[in-house]
Length: 289
Image (cartoon, rainbow, N blue to C red; front, side, top):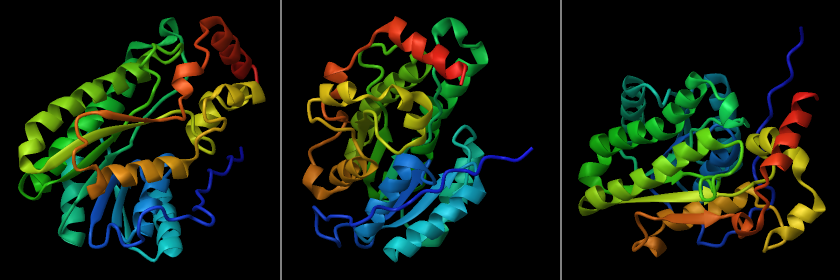
């Protein structure tokens, strides 16, 4: 049986600088989930501002491909490191590799995540546990290791990528929403305890972002002109938008920003429908495709 080719990540065409291009010169970022999607573009935006990066996930083949693409587009170093956020020993090894390679980790982006559409009654115990382990436990595990290995003594900025699904109890998303809510609570605790060590901890919560695996799998077929027109800014978000938002948060322009959430969705969560029956019909339609 032939396999469908994996999605090939592409860099931004005609990137427009908002901050000066050397904003992150001499800095290093450690990015989980950096081989694909939003976190791939976060890595790219950082690298376009002269930051070197370490991108981590479980798939080394995809990481190598993405690292080569990013380095070719930006001229900066991107080191791929295989890692499982659920396994502390794997994270410790990855952090040590990053420090051996670069000698520092200034920014941590926790972007590894798992998600799918399911009503609560359709969630197995293991499915709920797995999403919590990847998203919430994984964020704790990586943050603790990076803090203890480097940021405790040198300071830094941690960015936890969350979502807007937990704000209203989005239908078919109890597993992911619970994990994101846990991350946002955890962020506050980390910001309070680690602030005295010069560590800022923040959440950035994207809404629906076009050209991502999440959108292709979770809601792409439901996007209509009426839906887009219901968003206050009148357009879908782009991965570049999130990259620029995270760039602002790690920059010195955000020195007073810690322990809170920046929602980057154009106001979509305020106006979008949360109709259970409508979304259930979408799920049924997807299952018959």
